[in-house]
Image (tube, rainbow, N blue to C red; front, side):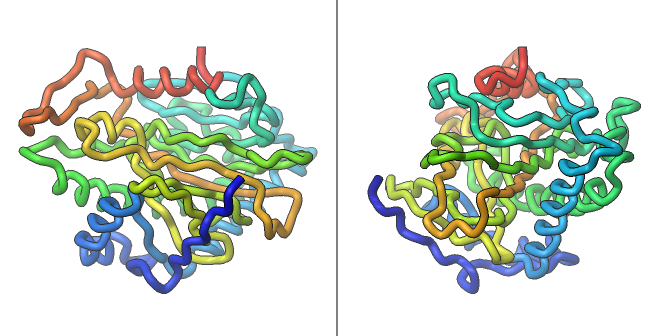
Length: 312
């Protein structure tokens, strides 16, 4: 495989404070628009976020290692798709089989924590978080910080579209923090095949190691340097690409073995930000008018999860 150029972002992208995400983000709307035009994703620094992401990884690791209670008690083999509650649960090693993987599961286990789960909707869905309070605390912090950021970025993107499109209608209940542990990778070069997310927007937190690669708008593959930094990426998902009338392309990425890997395990976290799953899908047409489909965003999500073997 040809070498992929490292993309240094620390110190070169807009900086947002942990306690002033919304006001700081609005100061940099032009820069975010320029990034989207050039890269197809957006990048920013948030001093202190790296330490909180590391705390999530430690809490997830402790939950995986716990014998009483056991995280496996809360495992699912299909994504609960409650219309008012997003999806949530712990997915055991080898649960996800991407479309391009020729039937071979990704070497990872992961969990989904939805905004609804954080509020125990539906009743009982917070049982996993009640059992692992450190995990609950760190997941809630990243969820709330990332969701606030996504709301502001959503406003930036809406201003880039023609006509008078509706707001993205982002829903905390329908959105999800996903935490992943890659392990037992053997001699695999590809840990996650080339893909784009289902969601409207995604907030990629710093992973524990390198290997996350993105394709720019000009077709060049790069590896943003995120590990050990406070740099976040904001991705365009397939929902938003469709809603924009394909004026925006999904932020396509993959995970390869890092040449400088410091550990046989790799941890990562991302917030998938969705609209209310009960709302109808919409799209900005060529002339800027907006049309609404009969299908809901929940059906869009379910189709994407079906491709991953995570829904019926």
